[in-house]
Length: 277
Image (cartoon, rainbow, N blue to C red; front, top):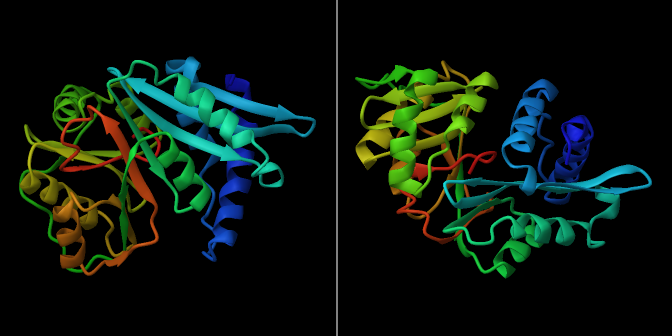
């Protein structure tokens, strides 16, 4: 993939996700801001050219796979196929190419939609599956926790230390990319951090459940009467389910799954990033 492919990949992804929503009987999700998507995709093309691949046909971009590798932990950031060529082998070829980038990695991470084809494909790669929940709704009476503050680029060293504790590898410059995308970094000094935007938790990692719970409450408090969305709550993240229920959010079980294998640390307390794992 080249940086000049970013706009076409965004169009393909928008069509693919709208098609998946229709197949699952879900209301369509609003497509993300193209300018924000450009920052994400261009960042990964620059940091991980060996993991960034597109498939082309006579109509242009037929599909895309974006894989990342941070401190020897690999993750699949994106796998999409244009609706008219799905189930024709494009996705399999792209996934195989992206997975080649995992050769020799200590661990692998994939976050899957509830699409049965995706779940099957990732299970066949030999990763361990952890079904997940979503929590959504308007939070009720969530006070701002003591000690939580807004962060900036100078807090990235703390995020790296926390990441290495919970997932065996730091996100590093990916946190900076999220800030460039207009998202908010929340810091529990010496305890953990969270990234949030437009009411949606994007990433949360902490040294212990108490710190993680405080950070999640801060994310919910920031919604100011708007809707919140918390994703990737697996059975090992009971603290997140408890905080979500305390805030009056509804849990949903049709949320896909987290796939991991190898050395990815305890992977808790941790709610991963869909884009940056």
